[in-house]
Image 1: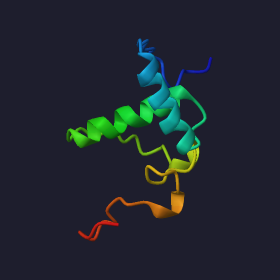
Image 2 (image 1 turned 90 degrees about the vertical axis):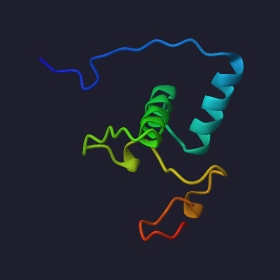
Image 3 (image 1 turned 180 degrees about the horizontal axis):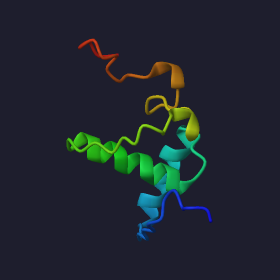
Length: 86
């Protein structure tokens, strides 16, 4: 029998404004679902707090193209790992 990759379910309530913000963020990044967007935002928030959730299997191509906040995948402003931004 198939094991669920994500066996835990989490239900949350959002305001209209929170849902609109989530959908805007999701569509700019061409993510396939709200659930995928919530997982990505959760992972980013935890990383910002110093908590890593890397499983070694997830790639950006699994959920779409991620760019900066203006939706341009070629204009990613994150650090390039050399100590210099962008």
